[in-house]
Amino acid sequence: MSALLLALAAGAVIGLALGTLGGGGSVLAVPALIYLLGFSPVAATTASLVIVTVTSATALVAHARDGHVHWRTGLLFAAAGVGPALLGGAVAGRLPDVVLTAAFALVAALAAVRMLRPRPTPEADRPVRPGRAAAAGAGLGAVTGVLGVGGGFLAVPALVGVLSLRMRAAVGTSLLVITVNSLAALAMRAGTADGLDWGVIAPFAGAAVLAAWDGKRLAAKVSGPALQRIFAVVLLAVAAFMLIDAVAR
Image (cartoon, rainbow, N blue to C red):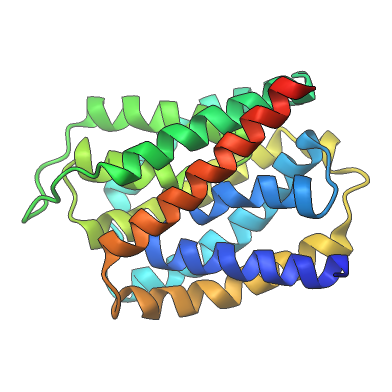
C-alpha cells in the first residue's frame, strides 16, 4: 500500500476517534507515523503535533458552536500547560529514540488503563478550583511537549475527574486545551520540522479533519463508554508493541 493511502487511512481513524471521544485519537498518530510511514520518533512526534493542532482546532469550532466549550476553564487549564509544553518540546529533541519510544508506550498504556476504568461523570458542572486546574494543566502540557500528542486522552479524564465537568463539556473543552498546548510545543520544535515529508503529513491531517466531523456525529448516536472501551483495548495493544520494540533495540 502506498504511503499516501496509508496516511489517508490512518488520518481517518485518528480523526474519527478525536471527534468521537474528544481525544485519544492523536495518541495513535505517533505509532502510525513511525511504523506505517517510516518516520523517526523525533520526526513523528513533531509531525503528530502539526496533525493534532489542525484537527483539534477544526473540531473545536463544531463543539463551540454547540455550546460545549468552557472557555474560562479551558484557557486556565491550557495556560498552566504552556510553559511545561515549551520546555518539553525543547527536551524532546535531545532524547534518544529508544527513550522517547518507551516513554510514549508507558503513557499510552496508562491512558488505556484509565479509559477502561472511567470515573462516574458528574450530573452537573461544579465550580472549578484554580489550583487544581493549574496543576493538571501543567502536567498535561509537559506530556504534550515531550511526546508530541495533544493530550486529549489525559485531558478528558482530568476535566471530568479533577475539575468535575460533564462529559460533553469535557470533550469540547479538551479540544481547546489540546490546540493551545500543541501550538506551544510546536513553537519549540521548529528545528525538527526540517525535512518532514509534507506530502504525507498534509493528506494525513486532511483525512483526520474530515473524519473528526463524522466522529462528532457518531458520538451522538453510539454509546460513548462502548467506543471508549474499544479504543482503550486497541491503544493498550499498540503500547505493548511499542514497549517491546523499544526494549528489543
